[in-house]
Structures are given as C-alpha cells and as structure tokens.
Length: 129
Image (cartoon, rainbow, N blue to C red; front, side):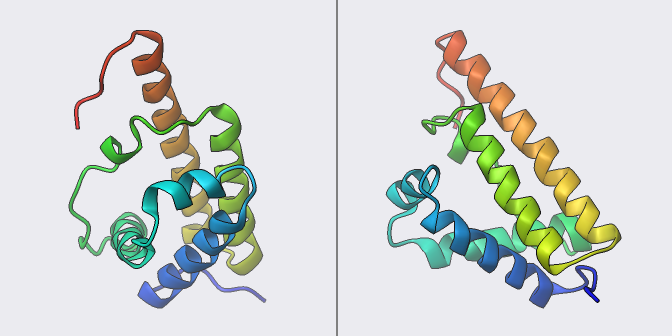
C-alpha cells in the first residue's frame, strides 16, 4: 500500500524521481538539460522548497516560478509530456489527498504557464523577468 506525501523526505523523493525521468526523456530532457546544464543540484533544491511550500504549507520557497520558463522553446506537446511524467511518478509512488493535490496543482501550473508563453509569443511581447 502506498502512502501519501507527508514530509520533506517524500517531497525530495518525488522531485528526484520526477527530474531523474525528465533528464532522460527524449522530448523534454534536451530542453531541461540544455538550460540547467550542471546546475541540477541547485534546481532540485529550489524544487524541494517549491513543493514543500505548495503541499506542506512550510513556507520555504521564495521566488517567482514563471519567469525562468517564459522563453523556453516549448509547446503543448512538451507540457503534456511534463504532466504525464509527473502524474506517473506521483501515482506510482503515493496515494492520498496530498498526492492528488500535487497532480492537480501541477496540471493547473502547466496550463497557466503554457497559456502565458503562448500569449507572449502570439503577441510578440517580451515577458517581464
């Protein structure tokens, strides 16, 4: 029986497993690896605090999540793959209210990011960073 996401160790496991798959993915791996390069430990630490804040109400994240993504060369296909991998990782390892919330929040975030990226591209507007 799987358990729910309960603490920082669960967040770290979720994030590490997810980004481990992202780095090896044929579609989105090259984008992430090309931008993050050798800064994966720094990125993972930021993601731990982000999800810890979102799911556990431990306010450890500070920052604005959209600007680093604003000019990525991504489309709906990339976001769909991102959501697919995220859901597989969460559902494959956890079950419960927090696991469901993680998937819901990831979906909403991806939808919002794609919408904003598309808007900026279609209107030839440079996003604020």
